[in-house]
Length: 165
Image 1 (cartoon, rainbow, N blue to C red):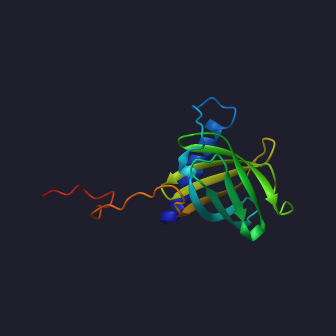
Image 2: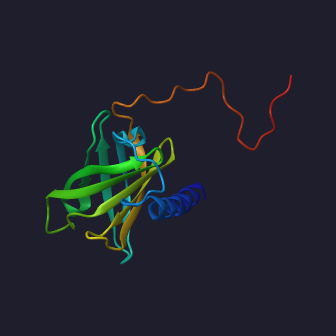
Image 3: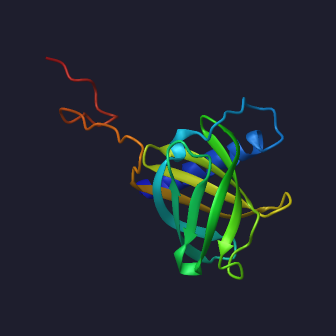
């Protein structure tokens, strides 16, 4: 049940973020360079309105503006070039560098963090087009980002009352 909740929450957050913070919008203060929440190696399954699904891998190194993307099951991939963003949203322009017959080039992508190990992305067709695909990606390697330290003792579940002595 939890993955469904994450995916549903992510889609709502991403949609609201996309509407409020699309390039050209003055709803939030932009930041340079690319927000660090994107840093790492991410994998997931992308979905389209047509019902098709495909694998996606994203790698973004710390201190760089761009990211590399691969769609292994479609045999295409390329670069995501950072356009603008803020603490909780990053916009990229996708350039397909190989497998151009299998993937659309030039789309606009909105990426938002859902939790420390999850990102959502929404792909909008080129030239101000409609939402065409979406995904929730899971961090598989923190890359050059520093992973959070493990707690020294097990933490109580979020809905549990605080411990008393």
